Image (cartoon, rainbow, N blue to C red; front, side):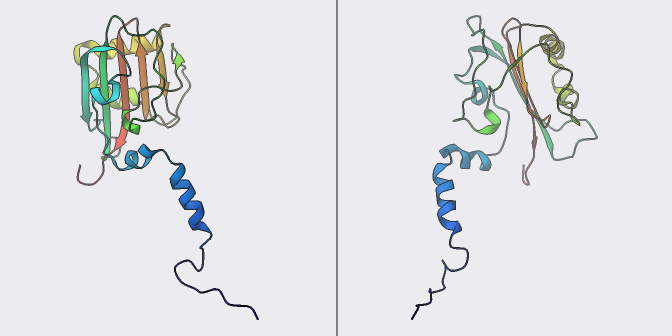
Length: 181
């Protein structure tokens, strides 16, 4: 005689719970916090001890003026002036930081390749907030000439630049506003 298995909370689909527990145990501790934190532009949080910087240039969180962008889109811009003793090589990615405060990763040397993410031109979308003190020209020069480094994501929602010769570090992100922001 065979005993029937009791049906309760662990009845149907019970085989998925151990897999879920293993997945949660393997996730980095900051991963859950990264998904719940509100994205914002913050120089100290983005650059902190990752790069040697001496002056904040731009710390901007603004809705792009580009009418083609959804109204819930934000430009998050954090830019600093690198100190004279800043490293020549760009920083590696620090996975302990929240996703929106990451600076570093798979850097490529400039000039920036003409091919890239399709559908979004983050510089055009956020350009109104880069014009202070001709910063937009400094940034374009860093991207168009050798000696700097850049990275961007495959969606066109991130552009970061590390330019030791021009002494700037820039992070430009597109983020989505959540309700209540």
